[in-house]
Length: 365
Ligand code: SF4
Image 1 (spheres, rainbow, N blue to C red):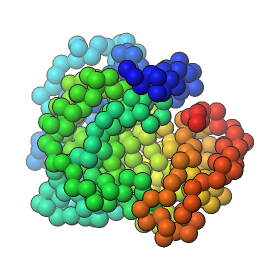
Image 2 (tube, protein in one colour):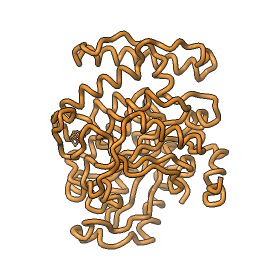
Image 3 (cartoon, helix red, strand yellow):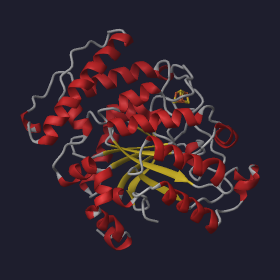
Image 4 (cartoon, protein in one colour):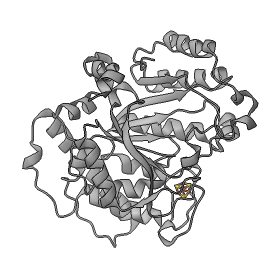
């Protein structure tokens, strides 16, 4: 409980009306009023065979998601009790696990669509195989106040190459990581919850290359812990679809306001289109916190267009964290303007612009 002293804002945020409005369901799970989505999905009965074609599985998944939405609504409104829902022979969560294994054989988890068979040992751009590689798992006290203490699980590997990455030893696989089975990972998640973590925060690198592991892991998690998808937002439509009915809170980076900067710094073609699409999907199927890490000299080309798009398309009530902690890491020296830290004036300019656009739910600095 020492975190109360280190992060008093993590306690105060529980009664913050703006945070509660953006993250009402998440707070409800913490209060014990609602169930995490993966638990609800585990009670949705689905009739399918592992031999069904992928096309049929997608049709089944779409229908099951409709039922999921209806059941979640009844549970949340008090019209049904979770413990009265029968445990099905095969659930929506089981269906997702089968589908994601199928996708792994021709990997399209992220927008790169490498189409390699990772189940047979082929590697794509991210270099991630089939078996999960753990870097570390701990109570993270540096996240947004509503998430702290956050049960953060850092995996090895990433589908982007951000030249300034602060976790580059993890994302670019300079660390080997510890191989884990899904049951071992499930035990770690349950332990983090028992120890008082508010959520399971899946991060890396990025969680996207390990989508198959995360979905399978939660088939074995019994604790009512909210799921947080902490991603660079560069995942495919298939991944976005499978995250529905699984992820409670999307903690999404909005890294760039134009594709030129995204390609130059992160080797991410069409980043803006993909990122926008995933933010829209996230808000329609779960709750959202947007992270904008300000980069030196990228206020006009990136931060401002990002804020404009969010205000127009997600609304000014969306929870946005404008972050000023940029520090040059790894190969940042290759990009001249990224060799220094952010100026105070650049941060203040971004905050002023957000206020001018009418944002009213910024994460306090
Ligand atoms: S997760 Fe992305 S980068 Fe990695 S193999 Fe799959 S499609 Fe390629």
